[in-house]
Length: 237
Image (cartoon, rainbow, N blue to C red; front, side, top):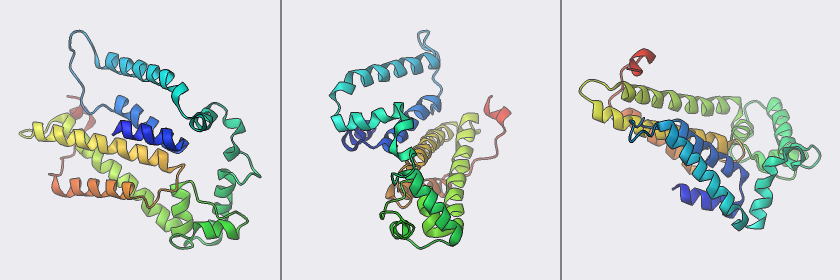
């Protein structure tokens, strides 16, 4: 799956996609679903360092092989000051977001589903996309829609957190099942972070992927035994 994501970023040159993929990779390293035991003197931290070195080496080797357009887009991460998206007067993303916020204040209930391009044109733009899922939701569905969207993100996060903590503590009689649920919940949490990071730079508020993710989390919460409340002290035991 990661290979497919990398190929997609290379072919599209999407910087938002690259940031989302980077966030997922870092989370998979930092929020490991299992804490491996010592083996042949190698600790979990040492394995993470080895993986990071391998990823850096792979990036250095593959960089010259990337398409020129992809390299030009990705290299802007090192020169954000000259990125057109951060400069006013170039119909940049910051311009689009500024116009959108003014429109939202004028109509807090939103302008309707799929209306963002029209709103942008009415406010002096060029029928641009939002390039931000939260801005897209706010302009089209209003403050209430944005609140509900963010609340779904938050509820999904804390719901998965309960499964992670219960699996870490190892509920009596269900240690194996709890551990499996913890692995699934931790990976779904990583998916939430990846979608949140990438979605901040892409118009993906109605993407099938994010709503499929919400559905998976809701299905897990409704079909799996509800974890007991676990204190941090118990989780560390």
